[in-house]
Image (cartoon, rainbow, N blue to C red; front, side):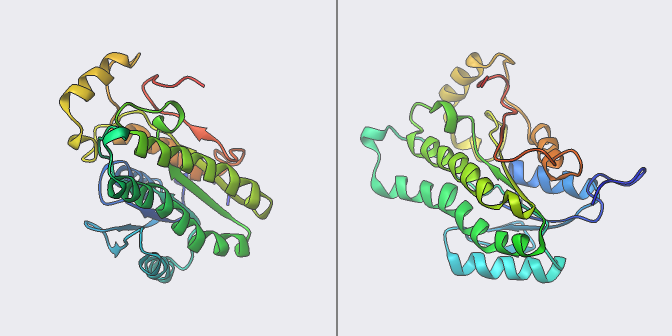
Length: 238
């Protein structure tokens, strides 16, 4: 539905924001609400709907609950994620597996249980939160970088499968953002990272959220198919 003069840009849209309890996901949920969308936040805490993105039964139940509340899901945002540091040569399998499960498999599961309904209705927007590290890699972050590279690849592949059905799938690959997730990274790493950035600072969640609003909107998001948008302080310049 195209925006009418005087209406909020997401008026009439419904959205499920997975991982919307904090950080970028929370900022996106707030921006969607401000733009007129009806929003359900799903998270392991600080959310109306509980979800564990590594558990398919929990994902299925959360999607069913959100669909019941909203009536349908027009927009899916996959923002759940974890971030830890470890040298690959010292990394244990549990650390690798946990990161891939949350940051990549979780995106697959949420898409798997939401997108079929979008295809059936002939409309939908999927916005996957990746990272610039999925493009350039990161020291001590091979597991996270690999998961986010996977999100970008998943985004492109799914976009090719469902665009003809009116479902547009895209990714956002932020640079380092001041979120609770980043708080666990060492100050040494963060200081070195700031020195690399042309902008000289990390972003804030509210500076990423408008990109998601654009991708969810009509006509603003209508021509984005399988794209990766990069609000990243200049860390990656494709």
